[in-house]
Amino acid sequence: MIAGGGTGGHTSPGLAVATALQARGHRCVWVGSRDGIEAKRVPAAGIEYVAISTGKLRRYWDWRNVSDLLVNVPAGIIGAWRALGRLRPRAVFGTGGFVALPVVTAAALRGIPTVIHEQTAVPGLANRVSAPFARRIAVTYADSARHFPAEKVVVTGNPMRPELRRGSRADALARYGFDPGLPVVYVTGGALGAHRINRAVGETLPALLVHAQIVHQSGDNPTTGDLAWLRERRAALPPALAARYVVTPFVGAELADLFAATSLVIGRSGAGTVNECCQLGIAALYVPLPGTSGDEQTANARLVERDGGAALLPQDALTPATLAERVVALVSAPDRLKAMGERATALGVPDAAERIADVLETL
Image 1 (cartoon, rainbow, N blue to C red):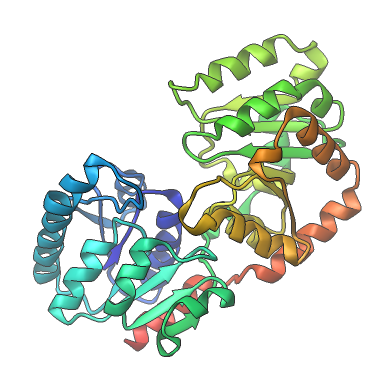
Image 2 (spheres, rainbow, N blue to C red):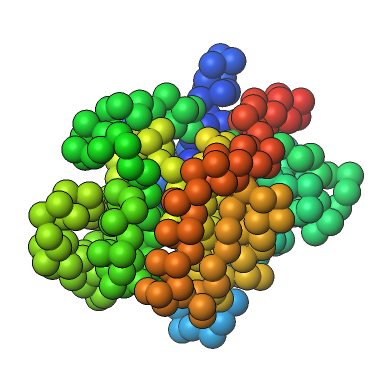
């Protein structure tokens, strides 16, 4: 049984592990939330899905903490208990986050061995709570091991969907109508986009597009209105520059091709984005989201920056001018981008899904 979701960073690794387990002849069932990203992606992958109530663990005061702790979390544990009793899994794999916590807790009460996975450099609250219940704790980075009991920890890396390795640069260039002689920059801020990044990119489009072609995954957040605003900015560009800029709310199955064509990623430094860039050897300019648990995004970015695989631009230093300066300097030095990508791969573990599958089989 695989448990987790809420974000792509907690869903994609589980899907990769499910693929590895199924290839070994195991049946996988996923337990997740009713309306998270996993509720769509997991059934689409052909994996049996069980939805339970979930609550969110917040480190700040919010009235929703009361209803989550008193209603949703207990209901989730009861739902997970029932699913475990009906399905009788040999082991449980928790991908982290608040969605996995009820399942890991119920599995411990039933005596079912559990492995949890920590994707980030700084463990999240849910995994800190889950750690006493787990038989093994898989971590992406060796630096994370110090946060958990040493006898439980195994360094596995962070699994990545195998299809992302099968992209075609030529297909991406054809899809977007791009010039093969100009570098491609991929801007991404997650499902809802990143408002500060979106605005900084939009304000400096003319300067950036002289040097590069951009695919900008902006999200479609009605609160910020970024997508409509970026489309207006594109419409105001001279035709030659407008042809170099693609703005889209989401990137789907074409992501593998886009990665194959990308010279530089600009985005947040969540676990999923950092892992994909490292695994695929793509240079990145990270703008960590401030205020995350333990400032995990800054820690993620600094790990890669320390090894020369990425550059870091703190959000409080992000302006159109600083962004343009950093991006132009990077895309104007292709040898540097290539070297950054090669250094980033040193942090990627290509067989991470197989390693986690090994741990689960051992239990």
